[in-house]
Length: 269
Image (cartoon, rainbow, N blue to C red):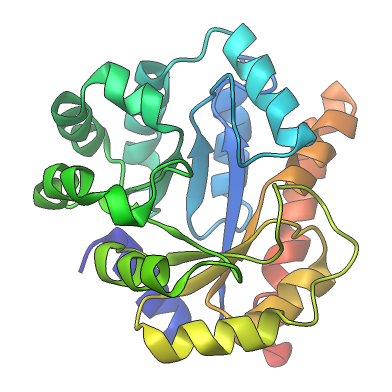
């Protein structure tokens, strides 16, 4: 088993779901990014999704767009993201790191060279929103020999053809989109979400993790009843944006610990 598989196996044994924070590398500042990611690693993250900043992040709402723009202005590149994982890996040997970015970044780097460098650094998987599963064969053929998981999106509106491709070509876990639209905080989870997850569960053995619109302990607790993990991005970035500089890591640690607590069985909370 690889790190992602071992993590979900461990969580299943413990009766917990995964907490997966998202943060762009280089945000909010180049000099504080690594320290902030380490805070996430040490305050409840079961997997960490690191954003590769991109100028036209089509799947992201305003909060993540702004954070990505700020990270780009701070000079963050795909190479810098790989180097970030390389620096983190010795401290967190069992924690999966997943890079989330867009096709152009990886193509410009060179897919073969990227796969080799990413694995050497300790990257476990990739989320690429503008790579449709139905067109991903060349990417899968390059990444699979390097044991890099390619994680695809599954939405309530995903066509039957694309859902079949998503489940057959994806590995690691399925990124289940809770709502139609882009990333961003929502007050309530959609009523249709449990039925959507039940349908996905019947079609695949891959872990199901839910993202888009997740912000509160109540959201994470509800998702943990139906899925294997909750992905939190915009709400975490909002916490970072609103914290005073001298209280930033404390605020992030407190928020993460509250969310992680909501993934546990009632007897452990």
